[in-house]
Length: 504
Ligand code: ATP
Ligand code: MG
Image (cartoon, rainbow, N blue to C red):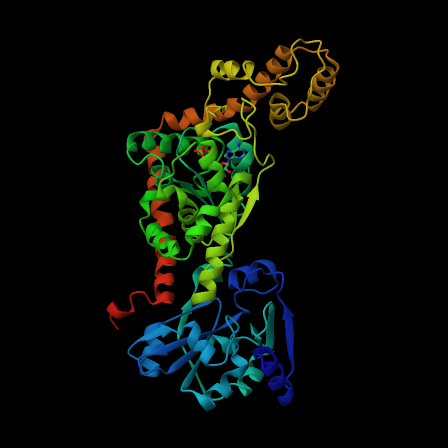
């Protein structure tokens, strides 16, 4: 019988009143997510934490979600030398489905297994708590006094301390991870594909921006100087478009070696044939005319480590990167299935232009394609690039009727010219053969120049303050690394990879 049915039957048989609360709005089961999207506060929530000691006894702690367990205290109370979180297979053995533990069945468990139950005294302050009901997307709201009736043998003890962040009502924000390969300066395609979204979303999300230098080495392992220069340019470009270092964390990928430990574990999880099938990789090999290194073939797996190590739920990217995110989702799913829920499923968010064409009319403006208008281009360079842009190849004279659809000059007008009347007028005259390419391009130049002006200025600010810029990168990398270390430790303990050398 499934957990949920057993719980409901049990509660109904004792005549206890309870409420089943709908938590389906929360996409994952994390407490933060529940607090964010449902009416629950951290103080209402109660978690059931399963530990196992060196004698294979189960120690179960019931504590409110605004408190942290003091493990030392629990060890003393239970006479345990070591306490580890119970693993997936332990919980299965005890009859729980993945992630669906509930205190309502603890009494029964004590009849079959060595289970000691400790309730933190602060739980007693609540009239009601919300805990698990053994059903995905739903919670059990129950009076504490009623819950005690089905608990079996338990002890109430002072075994927690306040979780200050949670008590201050600070709901951790959902995370974003996104970034760029330092293969050159950023361009206006990056802006509409991803940068604009990063800037917009940095208030709402805890944002991590990756300067993906490890990725760049996949194509240029012997060009470290060039890569470092590119890293710096990409870094300044991010600041220039409005990434605020007080809100977002910008970090250097190679400054977190733990990413590579995750990456090498993930490499085992992806079949060779699957890696070769990745459409992003295939496309890039084609248009960059690569004889790809092994590092390049497996870059989506490194990128999965980049994303999953932060448990990022959103990844703002251009359309060409969606298959890479799909790969990260597969890895997250397979890991969670094998070892329990560690990773959040990331989702891609494509910008208002999914894939901006190049100035040469090729399908994608690209750093490595020499068809880009850079965010850092000065006025003169911009003018040259715009005036020599590819337009409608069938139009020879200004009096020829031209095509607007798919014409890069008009695509750029639509994306960057804020004067919609001007665009409509130009389009109309273009299709009637009543305007020359020069006028269309000059107006595009003016619009792009207005767009780039404040970006150039911000870039200049940081160019002139290299120490301030460097500090941002150093502290960003340190901050990001702390998060990653935690994820790696969790993964290693879930996998049990170092079990044989762990000290008790
Ligand atoms: P490279 O040619 O070295 O691959 P790139 O120009 O493709 O460089 P990336 O660093 O690979 O740039 O991509 C950074 C981000 O910008 C990714 O999210 C990518 O999807 C997005 N992006 C890149 N080019 C475009 C484009 N032309 N239109 C929209 N988004 C883009
Ligand atoms: Mg790319």
